[in-house]
Length: 213
Image (cartoon, rainbow, N blue to C red; front, side, top):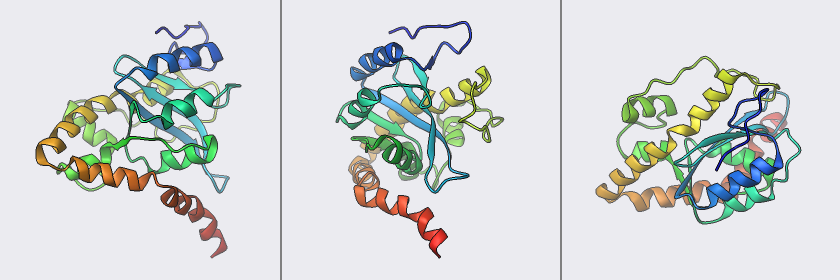
């Protein structure tokens, strides 16, 4: 699958329907799908989706939620039981996907939860886990990027792509470790609880409750 390359934008940036449809067709047959979001919630009760990053074993892309796109294919992709959807610290990503796209992903594997069960520490960050498992040091220069600004620089886009690029390696390593330890079912139950409607409703109610108090 090839995403169209334009001279004025990053070659792995998707803001056109043809490229999005081609990506979805490619991703449907993948064994897993890494997912991350960038969002803003400074001036709103609820997060505003600014960027959706996705990765398969072959390619990572950034999808532009601010473009005029039909999202039905993405909704169908992430609500199907396959491929496995890999997140790191999924709660806020699930909240923004639920609020902006009205979907809850199926078959979620949270690498932060998995890392905790494997002894990497409670609430281990993505960058430390990548360093520990992949021996790669990720940059921190763009953590405060205003992600709804356009255009994003190539460096900012690459930073966002890195947030999903290593999810597959983390997944395969942690999945194997949990299976060996007999703890895989623990993670399956924890992730199912995380994606439940009740959990998401509580998360969405939190900012309103803080204001009302």
